[in-house]
Length: 328
Figure 1 (cartoon, rainbow, N blue to C red):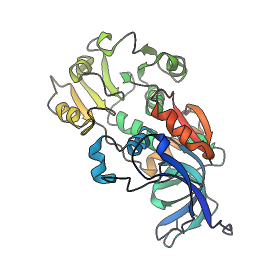
Figure 2: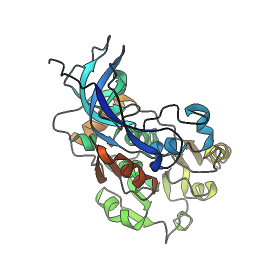
Figure 3: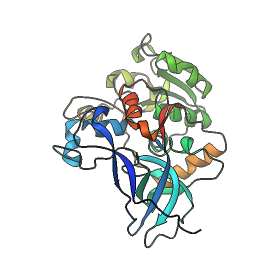
């Protein structure tokens, strides 16, 4: 396919200092040509993750050691993407101009983004790019949280199941034969039941500590607010708590809690911190499940790129059911 003629400039959403969504603004910048091993992607859809909000805030403050002490080192927001390859850098053989792709990069809240080809996978023509864009970060996290367990016939508790990671975790666990219980806000209960949760629990009226003791083979803790002994007490012998999320303090965030979890094992009941990386082969598997109707991303709101700050602000509020997707 002949490479399309590219515009000289594009819109990208960036921030000059850490802060709320009000600090992120549309900028006009030159379109950058891909270097070796990279491709240029024309965005079709970008989903917003909680990680985007943490980077926007520069919180916890320890992350600023890696992402900029006084101001963001990478000023553009966005990680997930689905779009079309419009230019290919030297050494890229796996992708070509015109390929529809999905994956993860940086500064994807833009009309175009330069992305390493290794972080992308082809997207079938019959898959909605908005649905696909929900998969890379949240989907890889869900897969990692469930890894290493035989789920058929087991009972899984997902704590804080209403967001992007939670809604995918519930579906993946149910598809693999688990009986899934999900704690969430009341507004997400109907959605999670439709996605395969055998039982949903409104965390505002029934805290995790009121759920049956020694009842679950796996607890996936996304909310990160329940004391570790309370989570451990819900496990059967040999069970595992997968620690996905956690807010913690302003400086160190969830790190103290993760350190405590290393010493909180009792009678074979243990904790496993989840550090998810976005792998193109895992994303490809998730896309296959999506195309076969086994996964259905929950999209609460679709927002045009011209209003991307509103999408960030909505996720920043912390009450999103599923995902918010920005359409370019």
